[in-house]
Image (cartoon, rainbow, N blue to C red; front, side, top):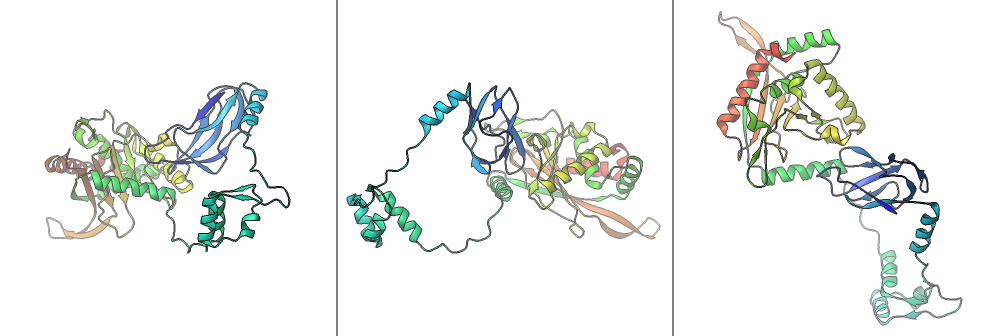
Length: 372
């Protein structure tokens, strides 16, 4: 008999939901194959068998389960499984023969008197022996229904709340902001979209700009360890906050500095579709070393995001804001601006370093030729 234990799929959830079994209970498993689908607050994962055998399910579809819990067994044969089932079966509670008077323990009698449970109700249980647990069950059934509960937060939102709480509790954050003229960046995005057929946007160019500055600003891509050391990242893996109405997700553009603008755009398009359907795989949400938070809804020009635990920096981008300015000849011209918000862990990053990163990213977006 081999136990199939549920692995730890992420560090945010203390429990998962076993959505469905992909093979029926009692099936013969030939080798390593997908057995069940488990859903965390962010993603769905398939649980595979650890070898051949006869499947015996312990946790049904739709039930909650915890990391490390044994959700099924694999038996060498059907006979071994049947033997286990016979030994694990729980005998039904003893019933009193017709007309027999049950034996009621003193504690059960006292509890029944305290809650006004009648002798007839106790006899109606059909037990040979009535214990306090039996009386408690009667009391619960007789209790008035509780008042309607308030609106329950989704599992995804509870996870978001836990992350936000942890960030507020542990990260002493500071913030800085920059105003960026994105007229040339918007023109580049338009040209790339027409040439490649991909939807290239300002957040796409921002992801590329941030990733390109990894070598110059390694602390912005680092993680503070429990012993007070700083673990720098060798690569720029840029997470992107995304909410399509099914909860907040943070998919990751891995090795973003090595990707073209249209490739990043295609990844974001796929991420949006998965955010809408809630079909992310855990690997797509893992490994971010820095975060970009688009807040590009019309009229939202400034946003202050949180630093995710395990990271030191997050950069937000607001919607474009048109402003009329006078040029050198005194002629009024319309300029297109966005505000970048940089929030950073002040234990690791000082203001001077934060301003330097903002300045570099601003320069990348205002002279964006290298971002294509």
